Image (cartoon, rainbow, N blue to C red; front, side, top):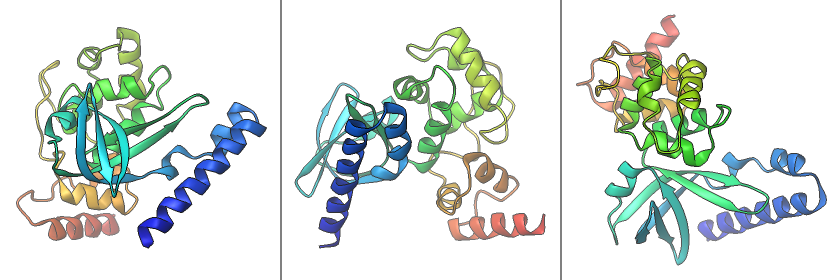
Length: 231
């Protein structure tokens, strides 16, 4: 019954958004329909895979979700999956973009704030490697790395590096063009927990700096929170 109410609420919000599109300007409708509040995640069975998308069956309702290449490769047919989602609403279409980690979703949301970077370009950038590798490349202002993404030119890559290098967290030194995996990886449950508490990607990364990676998740979160209070 709870899931039924949730689905009903989502449909009601969607209908209000469609009404806005029909009765107001495109800009006003976009402002009233907060993309991030529509569908936050999907949890179900991977029923189909094609192109760069999967269909996730959630109690008989299929959601088509576009994924970065790494997440697409990890999505196994007929296996259970949970994907954090960004619901992109346009006048003529709606798209779901999915991510296996909250960190990846947060980085995606930062990328699409850059002028000239739409959801598909952001997904292409995330397809360059693990989320932490991409984050670290941006933190190091490595536009050459970003420019390797499909459909992302040199100017857009430079804009990403300039606009976001100080918003994605601490940079870890590496040889330009070959980002390395750092202690904060895409499966870092402590970082995920901090972001669930409202931390930005940059703040979560900074809070975990110096916290021993071999501690369990709860201990790392406590250490990060204690460190912030001390400051």
